[in-house]
Length: 190
Image (cartoon, rainbow, N blue to C red):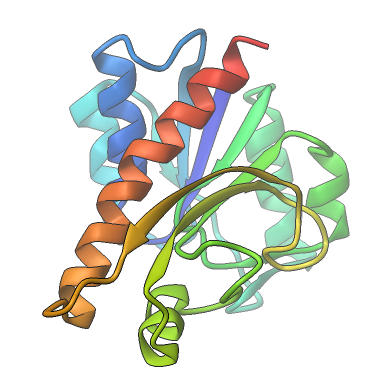
């Protein structure tokens, strides 16, 4: 299974996927390319570390969505890899119909809450402020509805007495780093 990873930030989830691949724990999946929508995204440094091409694709003109010329550039870049799976690992843009149609049924996203609870931005903070006792992370198929696609798997994280927002975030990120590579490995065996 040919995999392309899209991200916007430091790349801890991309690193978890690449580490799983390096350890032979990604099943029949192989990461072909990393793409970031920010030229200084930390995830771009993962490419040389893991021997995987990594590049910036200009998402302009919009800041929070992928549309217009930026969308066309991303479609062209990702299409050139002929992926079987496009993984959104901290890709902080809303995808529009052009991209969704170009890779229909091939896009998954990682979200830091137990969807359908706390969709959108700051899922961890939303759960913390609401005072729930159980949160976690979700891997789901991507549709036009933000964080609304079919749920593929979830991992729960208990909020304990004494947790802080920072300690909760660390626990959720650890769960993400376990869940996302496991889901990719399972998908590769289908």
